[in-house]
Image 1 (cartoon, helix red, strand yellow):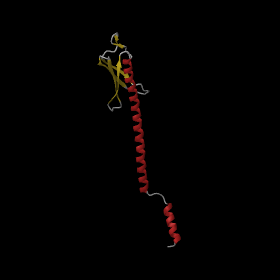
Image 2 (image 1 turned 180 degrees about the horizontal axis):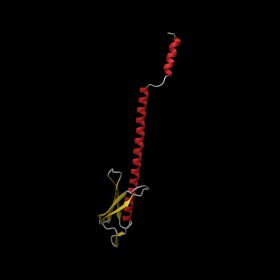
Image 3 (image 1 turned 180 degrees about the vertical axis):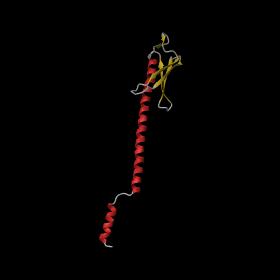
Image 4 (image 1 turned 90 degrees about the vertical axis):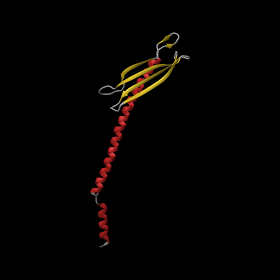
Length: 147
């Protein structure tokens, strides 16, 4: 065999295409990568939606605390903030299509001490997300008279 013939055979092998096995393995690797990208996108989309609902629930809990803090409370004159529990049912403030997401705001006012007068205000907003159960956002604050 001459040197020129060997070089021609080697050049032909270098210019030939992929084998079927190489193509199948490359396609398998590519499909696994694409599945990972799609799963990551769907998971991040779901997590972003949950974060939006959680922020809206935190806002509702904050509104409940602010409503209780707005009541007048001077133990010697007037008491619009008695120790009590009350419930508000509202929809989460999110732009959405379809049926609204309802949240229940539990507001609880308790007396911490009488001297000095001090009350605790706690608001817990309970909401449901996509058949994953109930979630709760809670805010607790203390209030002295005339604050």
